[in-house]
Image 1 (cartoon, each protein chain N blue to C red):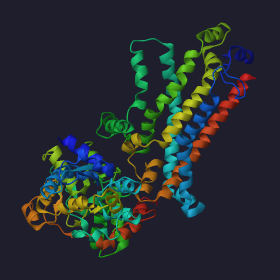
Image 2 (spheres, rainbow over the protein chains, first blue to last red):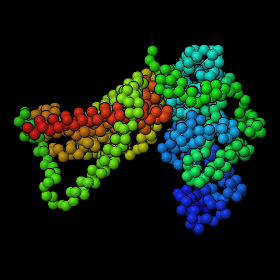
Image 3 (tube, helix red, strand yellow):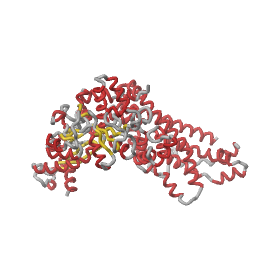
Image 4 (cartoon, rainbow over the protein chains, first blue to last red):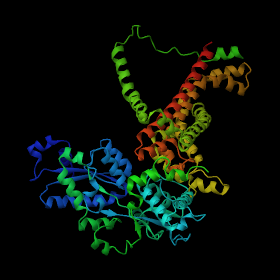
Length: 339
Length: 292
């Protein structure tokens, strides 16, 4: 049945001609197929959520809908959409990547104000994952620059999650040094001096830390840390939440040019709106993302303790943060300049 | 000895190649030639032309700037030096392995012969993850090397080790057929004429194998310089230290700097081309000397 469903869905996507064939249109409304281009850690969440959406869409008279998923690094997905991957919706790790698609005319430049909460239905933050019992006594950011502590985190140039981690460290250091930017960068430099391996993505770093046993602390997504504990068992790692971190907002958007071409705008918009409803919020929390809904937040208060979080606005938004820190010759490059 | 070289060098095979104006036994030159041009153009030249056309949006200065950054230069140096070093070692070990496989019969020869091809068949990421697991400080080999103070995984040495694995089959498969065609009676004749084993090797066998060894070197080098999948997991990817040139390209793309990425790609293409042309001209020079 489900194979039949997706086959019909694919046919619908392949062109209006399929819709004209009377034999294919069994439900009252025509079947719809959506493609969601997302980043790596959302794989498990969207698998569940797509089922929720299919049921909801049908209940509200929308007929059959199938959602296909594509997962990869956030930046890679954005480039794929720019280069012609016909994704109806994108659900990526940072607004900078959706901005990049918008700059090429595929998405309305004002996309981020079309949905509540800066178009980020769920959030996450940057935490520390340490080995069971915390043998190196790592409790806060200052412990990460101690000699003899090895920090595992991916390369901010290639990983969205690593960019959030870099900015969290920079935000802490800026506050700690009373706004002195040079000393703040000195702290970040000290931190990256303790990084022995720069993997290209968040999953790669998790593998290095969890499977290969390298390093004393993994600096990365809270949802990845919770997932690692789920997968490997709670007996091997502890999560340490620092005194402050950053509110990571993975945003979502309808790709206007694609939905207008496919005629899928109504379904794509309903898909993203559903993310902000109670059942979807609860599902996101079960999949280790922080919910926006107050009720769900209260229900999962033990899993997600309240934290002192700065936001990307503190860095002047993603365009400014990217240009200053991660572009060629930015602050991250300076860390590795000899001398 | 020079006369002996000439007398016993394998007679150059007359290639079954004819001028396009000559009449061929089989018809169809026009169609086959047209197809060849179209196919080579479509599969090889077109993508390269697209690469060569991409980086110029900030002019020549932009391309030069993108390549001359210390980080990019360090990555290019690492990629090409590690590839050259690994290719040199692979020429030596590949020759030995090809020799053993063609000149001796032993139980399991077929298995060893098939194993040599494994780096061709294995997805490069699988090879890279396996190598990283073995050589990381907690792995089977890494844990043995650590007490001696040797670090392989997450250092430039790791890049070299990964390229050893990637390049080996290129050398073995280039040398093996030539070695199989090399008549063993040549060596026997050299010995009956009083050549010592070392002389037989350097004056009779090696000259016949040199073109194949050069081909193997060039293939292993070119492949190694551009290798991404198997290297990325073991390199450690520290900017300026263990970051390879293909990663710099990926990094640039990640920042939507298409022109910068294409500049580095063009630089890699240029260096590879120079090395391939150099190897080719050595081969031509050698074959001229041989036929004189």
